[in-house]
Length: 465
Picture 1 (cartoon, rainbow, N blue to C red):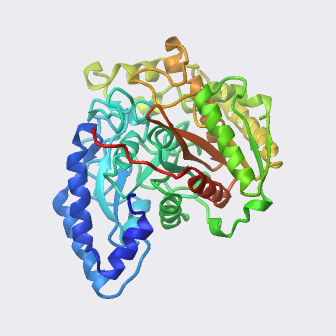
Picture 2: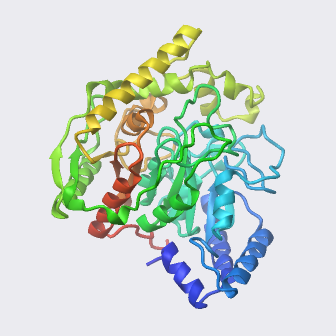
Picture 3: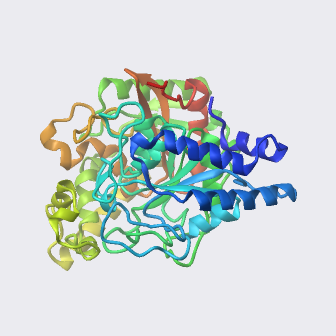
């Protein structure tokens, strides 16, 4: 079993291991995971210096949630002195300041271990970019770890990081977490500030769709990192000071839980559908009231609306960040940028129509969720697919239309907290289940994920080849 963040913290506090020794351990793990191609940038000397500072704090008797614990950060979040390219060749300057959430991680004692790979500007569920190349799955190099937080998924899945920070617009935390057998949480928009992210997560037509959140190998790891990062920041006008509740205070027996495996656009394959049903049974066994549910009909348009919303400016916001040399981009990036799969706006009227449609869907889903405390659904149609193919047996011609991810797009547009929890290994690949709750109730997501971790054993490290 790989130690959790709490277990590493206990060993650090007891003096059983130093922060420098723990940092060196994970630097060695990064070296051993080099074939995954999941590291966008690293500075080993800086890691060891930060670990030495943590050791001074530990020897002085200081205690903090992440003191001495290595943390990886997705490469669209600024870390002072390290490149932040977001998978692109367009940005060459090195940030001189930390993103707000990185400042909070350091204040809590976290040691930034490395920046992790992502597809160019986050526009894919396949982590492949001109800046770093293709990232592969920790269990099968012929498969993708997902995206766009694919580097985080791969490293955490290989135990080459203790805990990590991803971002999620259309499923970019939930999909890699499901593919790699991890726990991941996309918080309510505004829970974690995006101050210091690139490309700017609140710019252009993105509204409040993109969020930063934690990824890890245990529910407690995710909860700890979320608590450290949460809270408002003036640099992100969408951030909000809503109190983060303690998931340990949730009484599972009081929960109303709904579940479903198809939504009119996406249908889970038999393996993923069985995982959702097993998760529902586990929550029922824990005392929750569980029933099969049917989401509102409006969710059938979630994928189309998601891409219309993110491309509502015709891609001009992203296009302004990059050059027009095709050699500097992947073919997939150019196709998505220049030919959005579900069209883009051509007028201000179109732009506002997209806003209205998104808010209407958000209203429908939130009203429906008034009847439940937790909803279980697939993350996407299947397990981790082979590179450049859709999951769950979806036809190849639909690859870049992304209907297989309608389950995640629904809750991105609805602005709700949603996580992924592993519930099975089938044919050597993890099966993840999506856990959704009402706005600002991350505690309910985490409490349900905690039950699933106990019921199914949580993360399993792949055996060495």
